[in-house]
Picture 1 (cartoon, rainbow, N blue to C red):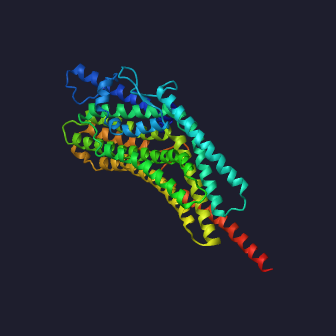
Picture 2 (cartoon, helix red, strand yellow; picture 1 turned 180 degrees about the vertical axis):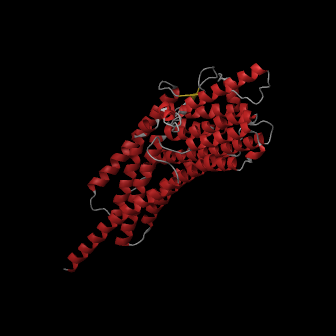
Picture 3 (cartoon, rainbow, N blue to C red; picture 1 turned 60 degrees about the vertical axis):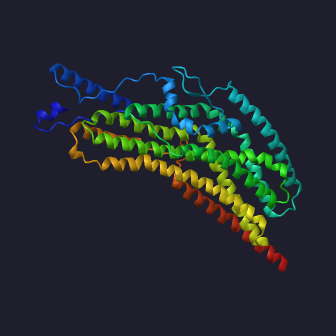
Length: 448
């Protein structure tokens, strides 16, 4: 084609740049840097400005443990999940070529989880049988009591989804924990300083205690507000509500830690930029940022089924509770029993708001805020190699957006809140239209 164009006095077409995936681009960049290094060595010039990526080595497990401050500060929540039988992962012995966190179906943690789950399921089945029996054999009950039965029966079914939604993703959770462990040590080797998580240790302990206290408070409030809610029913709901609270706490802690790690990385990058010949370190910082973005994606992948079930329970419970309370107020006026339904509504929407809001802040701190600091760098005051590394880091941020995604099911951000509220409002309007139509028909028949 070029010969044909030149022979006729035309401009030959330009070459089409190949599309490379990240691994191919990384290999190509290393090859170009290595060739440049060989040319400088042949001329006898200094090689300080040429950076070649170091080969990956097996890290010492004792060093990994010493710099794994995230595990040490959040260990209480991990132990809480193990005791409750929700996520039976374990810490491996410090042996080389063995991940620090593992998951095995034959481990003692899994055996304990099966035992606790069996005991809990026995209580859940007894309560479920009582609930269904009362719901079927008492058709003349008030509407709000029927709504209460539907809500609490649906909550009991979350217990049966635990092995599928949580245990099955144990290997992915172990991968996520190991990514945090390796990232902190890699950060220390690159920057020379560890990642510090201020107030995370007392915060984790406080959330563990608060999760159970809130579960007890919600169940006891329903016991006092519902005449047919027996006290022994609460023992089936204590671990279920506490599990939902603990998962919300887990999400909050990880999102908070992502923001802390991003802030530490940006501070180290700005310090390096002010030094001499920062291009040697900027490539490693780019890899650290990409690893942080991948960790955010792995969080959603590891807990995708659990948080997906979480959102469905919140969506269903909120619609039923809101419709039940409004419908009962229209029929019989406001009473203390409707307060219990509003407590459920505010509780569910509070959980959804915390999860979506924290994911939004984590994505903004790792993505937009970090990118803004890079754009504020005065590139005219640095050398050409540093300018290139800054541009490549901006490209990496653009190509690897830090999005909290539930393994392709949904993106967790503030938009999810508005979307859920929109769907809830739509369903409520339709249900209330049927309710109002039924009331008018009843009144017309009574007047006739």
